[in-house]
Length: 383
Image 1 (cartoon, rainbow, N blue to C red):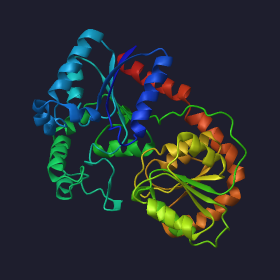
Image 2 (image 1 turned 180 degrees about the vertical axis):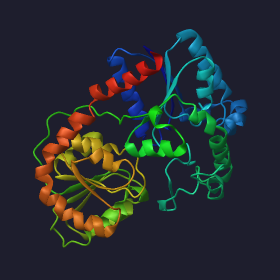
Image 3 (image 1 turned 135 degrees about the vertical axis):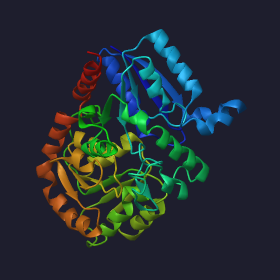
């Protein structure tokens, strides 16, 4: 089995979980005996492009002639069995789906966001969930609100790309939905259910869990959609010290909010940005991991890491969070009242759910299990 894995890597200036997932999946496929031909571009290339290429760059989300030519050559020389696409923007473009089909190559796409419909891919704008572009022939609200990179011109190009490639996306042979929420998004978009396979990201086994710690951990980007403000409002409903320690690890625009909370209460500790090892140490010091997103969060890796380390999760009922948590935690509406009510309950019941957390990881998110599922998708398309 030979598979071309296509991915436009996000800029190295901003850490990307999607880049990490693609790299890990390539390694897992190779370990399983699949011959992988990487077809990779990087947004880091944009600054070094010649002037002639930069002139065409605004059109690249619609069609990238260079990527089309490169894929044709790859297909000619490598003779792969499947094209597996991740992120096509901005340098690859969805047009390569048409190129692959023109050469008789089936296409799989892993859907990491909502960009078939939403220009920035988040369903989130101005601090709230936004689905204004759902069901529209042309996603005009994205242009009106400068949704893509804060630019009206770039938003217009992306909105045009979404319109032009509606048929392209509906021709993909098999979709990998990371959770049941993404599967529902694809069905709503018009993709038949039989062409959708739910396969979350895998996480390498960190080893046996350490004994449960105390209190809670919030680890992630400190931005509005991740729900730090919601969490701190809920935490403030409880007398100082009654819930143990709230550890906050990460960085982002809401860093001043985290610093102020840590300065105001002795039971809030701001750890700042951490290495993966630092986050794991904070997780082991904690009893419960928090996933308090206020957007349709697709697949927060923090949940997989918590389950693998035997930590139950308290999360909101949005996006892929309920699917990931399963029976290994608590799911509540994204409101201050609901979260404030759940915090003491989670703390009291954490030790009882810790074994279920590790069991859910072992049954659902290990690399061997999910790599076999992905290979089965390839085999199903190639006979």
